[in-house]
Amino acid sequence: NFCLETSLPSKDSYEAVLIEIFNMLKPKGFLVMLFSLECSWYTVNGTKFSCVYLRTGDMVDALKQAGFIMRSVESREKPLSGRNICNDTTGQAFIVAQKLTD
Image (cartoon, rainbow, N blue to C red):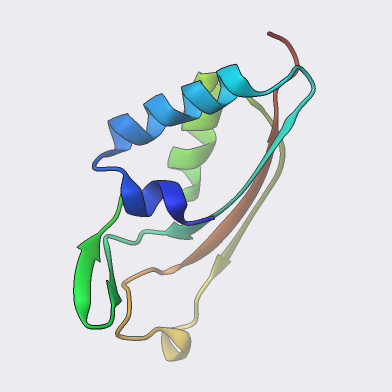
């Protein structure tokens, strides 16, 4: 994914979009997300951009607040040797959440 955290200006706006996604999903529908952990910036062709700083707990809390039920949550820390100058992420997280009702 990486779309939401790189295109929205704040954690509040991120949480608002999750509510909108919840409202668009059919009952029993799934949301599958992959996002960067603790990333505040990234670069593309030498241009630096900001992104919403998220931890796994932030995402789980925001999804629950939006009405989702967690089905799977996995986090993987990026080893220091695997980090690069393109971003400051510490890893990735993968979440599967479900909307049970309207």
